[in-house]
Image (cartoon, rainbow, N blue to C red; front, side, top):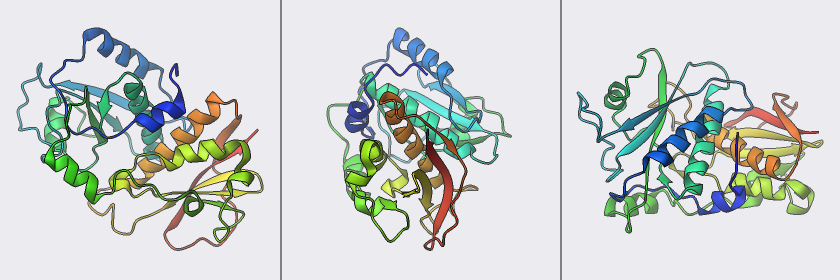
Length: 279
């Protein structure tokens, strides 16, 4: 991946854009975006497919909609996958890298997992019916003002609030908060995780530093994924992996992702997903 933008600065300035201006995205920017996508990969070794839709160049056979969540968007990018272990984490990782790339170019995005007409968009993008289509996003230049429904939604999900550091990250067990001093060189990588976007701002990631290894857990929200055929919060875990890994790469914190679950009793609703092993 050609990450020629500052990770922390971009993570901090990114926000979900639901109201778009009519300023067009020029052809060069679109070509650069498609070239960037060709370089994307993920540390879980899974195939993620990207698809584009330009509403000005498409005559959809079905009414397309986002239940009033998105206004003024012309361009959309969606993802399809074949269901297999770790593929949702891989999707979250690659799509968030794309989101950050777009943010670095001044383009807004908004993760959509449930608030869009999935069948209509799948048809308009000519997607394979056998593929899963979990996520898409509009992209374009933000409008000068947020629309009323956007303001209301941001208030409901407390979009600008994040769980404190000591409630997300733990040391040796889930009773002991991880201090920033013990986190050491990884303090800022963890802060990048804390600042990440997540479905309905649930922030399901929890990380346990045990014997020098960072173990990533999903603190699953009961019932939240019931309307899906999969656990949508696994995608959030991929976002967490992306923020952590991109910061580590930028600051030469060498390591690798693997699955090496430690033996310990877990709190209710806590699910082990993967680990970062420093090298």
